[in-house]
Image (cartoon, rainbow, N blue to C red):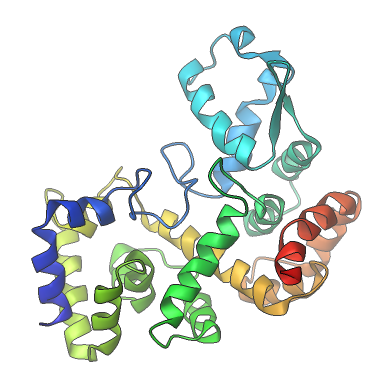
Length: 302
């Protein structure tokens, strides 16, 4: 059975189909748990926190409505709280010191979007949910561990990610091995078959998905997932690639501070400057250092 035949055959199973098409909780259609309607990219944390400024210090009953409505406020709170940007005390919602630093990043006009992205990632690297701590880190390390079981070393994964951190179109994305490896990393039979396939067999699979994606009415598992205004977008998946790349670099360095990571990551992105990022951090260095100590610092001691 070729990898394309496997993919087509298993789509007939509604359980398998939904498992990899849906981005809902308890399914495998997304790498990171924070992805939802209001949080499709990392920058959404800054944008949503900015919209929440008027709620600082208020009880939910005092929120009233914003342009987007109270219901959206309720949904944005969960991710902002998980990121440590807001906290709840005696029923009142307060923006934390970390949250205020996030807003400082949002307001800064001299930083590029990628520089803001890196600083934002550093702030939420210890993102946690009700179910587990260090959710972002564990998601990426889980990806790396799963793929290592099929012979893909971490350094090879880092290289694959670094080469595709600025994908812009569906055709380009679907043509990349890294897309298929991330999309199905929890499906061991598919991953084994994909890795063992020759280029001709892989290309047949990729060509099929690209053709399906050109049909807006396609019900193909992945093509449907990536339709316009669908559960996922090329930009969202590009976020998966970049977040994974950065976390794997930090993990590989096993340093005590952010410096080594920043020097390396600024080589990946032409629109970034180590000096600018470092200078911006300097006034609030204690916030960043504390996050590092309470995230990767703990992992290195285990």
